[in-house]
Image (cartoon, rainbow, N blue to C red; front, side):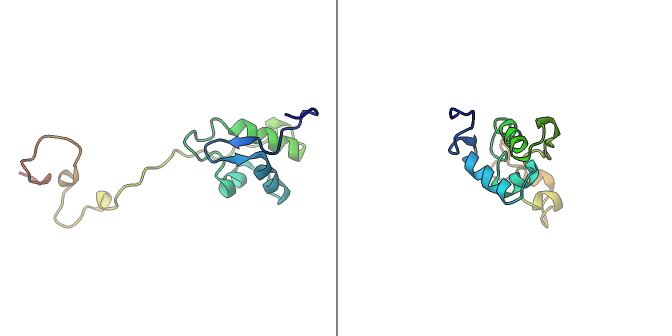
Length: 117
């Protein structure tokens, strides 16, 4: 922080996504004043920590920039991280069953590739 209590523009707000205070302030100057808006545009809070590190810093900056008390800054929407999967697992490929798609280290299938016995 500088002598007046102001944070340096180069202060990293979101370490996971490498978003600086200057990046956040530019978005606020363009009219984005909610956590969800800033998150969508910059990925702040969308890294591996899912905002555990940067959410409070972002809230404090939004409160300062908009003149609102920190308690009036909405927390934003939280969704669990997703994991990609093949659609074939949902609908089943022709001629395959759910059991034949399992490749997860079960019993030795004798070279059958997981096919039913």
